[in-house]
Amino acid sequence: SQQGEEDPQALSIQEGENATMNCSYKTSINNLQWYRQNSGRGLVHLILIRSNEREKHSGRLRVTLDTSKKSSSLLITASRAADTASYFCATDLYNFNKFYFGSGTKLNVKP
Amino acid sequence: EAGVTQFPSHSVIEKGQTVTLRCDPISGHDNLYWYRRVMGKEIKFLLHFVKESKQDESGMPNNRFLAERTGGTYSTLKVQPAELEDSGVYFCASSQVAGGNYGYTFGSGTRLTVV
Image (cartoon, rainbow over the protein chains, first blue to last red):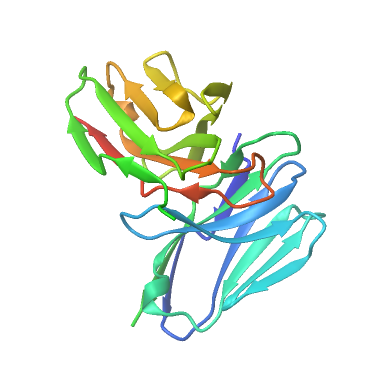
């Protein structure tokens, strides 16, 4: 069964708008991370939020975590064409040294 | 510092052939991971090395896949014989500390196409 699942699968917005992506997971986690993958490139670590944190900011990124609902959201403010990429959430479980990724949200920011 | 390097970046092979993917982790990173994304689906864990030892290979799909990390430096992932369903992007990651308390550094991936 899939631990992490992003929603929506695809999102298309205009440059300057905000983009919100959601991630749901099934079991209790240690931490949750968001990664970005530009076409043909590797996964880039964006932000990590620990299970005892509720919100975290990094530049134009804002991540929230609701452990009661087993969900997280990634908000990109004032989007740019360069933000066009696939975004993945990754969860890790206690005592397991591996991540569970979802299928990703494909974001297209139109100039 | 140099990042995680993977090669080849692309590989197209025929069904039944053998392909070997290579990953060079960041120097000094004892932990090395292989993941893959098949057909636009989720990215799945394959295995985890600590130095030259396989810590967890629970994600390896079947015995056609063989991963090695001789000497605890670079790692290879061999697929023999390759099947159509092996097509996908294979990612390698390394970290100094195991576990999810820190982000991993991923390579650019190897896109494998089996025809």
